[in-house]
Length: 417
Image (cartoon, rainbow, N blue to C red; front, side):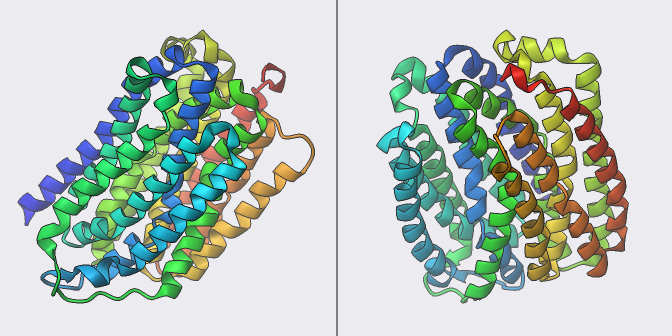
């Protein structure tokens, strides 16, 4: 057993390193080689791929049930509901993209719909791998999609032209689906044991993801909508890098989730990992502000220099936001779906509300991010009430991060955008 766990830790480390290394290597090329329109399209593709997390409503519930099933699982029962939802959601998102984002064209809308179909069909197989404690392998496969997308965003314009950029999104998600299916096949059969997850629970998880993702993606969608092609493309490229620093917490929560569903002895290490990673990211925001502007300009180019205070703000915001991965997984392991929904809903109402007050500029977008992060207060309160008293220590991280976000916010000059 020790050997298996070690292999999963190694796979999780690789899963975090692969997309981070590829995106770090490719981003300077994106920043320097793409036109303003190409940057806007690249930013939209990156946002869209991350936005698919809203539809990750089958995996958490399936994982919790599958950990108690020995042997192979029925393919039909595992995928039936996700297949139905995947067809409907892909058609709907294609239509919405065509109407709401006409500037990106029909190719982007079609690629978006097909990519969402493959993402939704990936979830059940991902859950099966997690349930047999192969979460590292599963996340490594899923992370390959991000690596493929970033390589494609550089390679496709250089070889085929910027007009083919939309299909990069489809390539990443289709390949990831195929690999996940192949990895899960040994644990699935036509006549395997059935698995049941209620439609109500799936809907609740989707609602949680929807209101949570309002905080995760509203700023980047608002940038696409209100800041214009020049600034929005730059913002979304810059915003993606701090988000990558949250990958470590994603990996840790994925690794521990099936374990805390079965064994409370993991909770101390689980909580401590979240606290330490959050402090490290917050410390990075301070380091960049004091010492790192030259490195930022060297990496992104002088074309992006006006966004440096925004970059530091976003790093601090991730330091706060990384806590929710641990709190959310703990709440789901205790089936506290209603409280989880409330924890994301109320801050989302506040965060989105600022877009309806006056003119939307860069400061409005950052204020929305600050308000969205208040979800951590509710998550801490509900987690403590659910028996996770150790999560009360997360308030220290939240207060420090909020102070840093407030300071960086005051350094942003909206006249530059």
